[in-house]
Length: 300
Image (cartoon, rainbow, N blue to C red):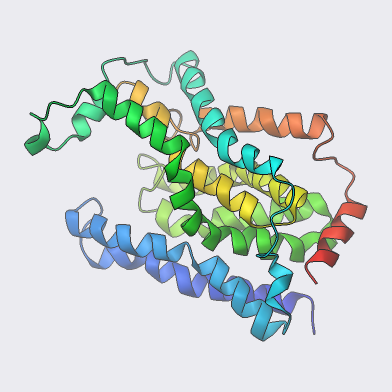
């Protein structure tokens, strides 16, 4: 069997299952309308399962291999789950001072953004804004990553559990960058509708690819260290839970393309510094032949 055939099937199935769901909200109303947001809140989380489903179908019915090759029954060294859980909120927190130092946003202790988000009918509730912020932070650090991992595994089983090992014959870094870049491109239908970069949706497609390249290196590192999709899935879930936390401490009106979230350009700085540390410390070395062969063999 051609080496490329399963990869083509994987990518085709992923797109056919997910992109219609990404586009589905457009059939229910204008972007931002209540009906549109309702459809997106249903369709987009389901779309997150598409890469994982594609990995299962491709492995079992196209490549005719055992599903055990996807390493769902493996966890790997437990210490990397601490990295997966707490690194994303740490990097997200770093986006706050970077945003302020670059003049992209202003620090706000009145939590005006939270106040704006409270529905008018709940305006009189005796709940201090500070308590709401504290509860959101606590949830992002505790229960939210565990809830999000259910959906994040839908992606990570595909991108890191299947695609990354399949690309390993190209070399570790080519596999990491190609799988991460494809992950970024996959978001395009949602990004063009204003997701993550609402002020610059077209430019946002390219910015999302850049963000996924950086974040994908970290998620790939977790996979390579554990040989398990569970570690990157936990990190992905933690990332989704904490990426927007800095916005609660910034004045409303900032352009989140450039600052305020982990996905913004300001957020890239912390990610880039961590990637540089991984490389400089030898935790993710440039030399990759032996490791590429080992990971590729573990997926067979």
